[in-house]
Length: 243
Image 1 (cartoon, rainbow, N blue to C red):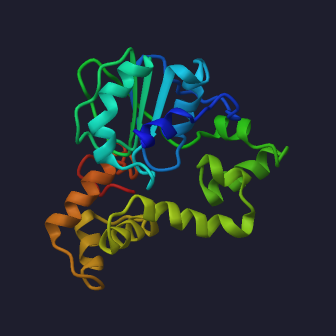
Image 2: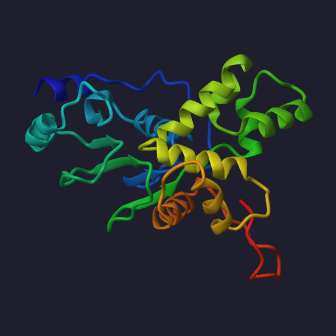
């Protein structure tokens, strides 16, 4: 049980948290959304209301946490320590969720389970961005940075010379292989252009090997997880959607 003992020692009482419009209010909540939008910090904020002995925080993407050992001992550990709040970060729903008073789950993919409330965490809107932005007192300057570098919370405090590289690293976090990276690169570089999905596929297949089915599946996946939005032209249902 060494891994669970280590997880049990983690405390979140001293986390510096900026308020978000979205908040965890239900004791059993699934927090989903793209990488780096602030899912974990909503969980930290919730945990700050409890004594550290009452919760168990497990990040399943942490290399130190061996899933087989966690699954084997988790239920017994919860009973032994009388855990009130269980957190499963980056959970793949590949083992049974233990029964406790409160369970918080984070995942990149949208998921609904009976008895759980699902909340989707987007990156900052501009009002939230201003609350986080202590560098720029000028609203116009803040808005220019908001448009130039995006609205992920960590971009605000990052040095400007590191922002582009970090944004590219975050994009890669959402991709399983080089093909997915190339698809996302094409979609992002085609923002606001008047191109159909089929036209984009035709462009991409000239540079990489990919089937039409997989390209369409990835576009649908990114749209369902609200990483990409396809916008209809007002009152013209048959017109090409913009990204």
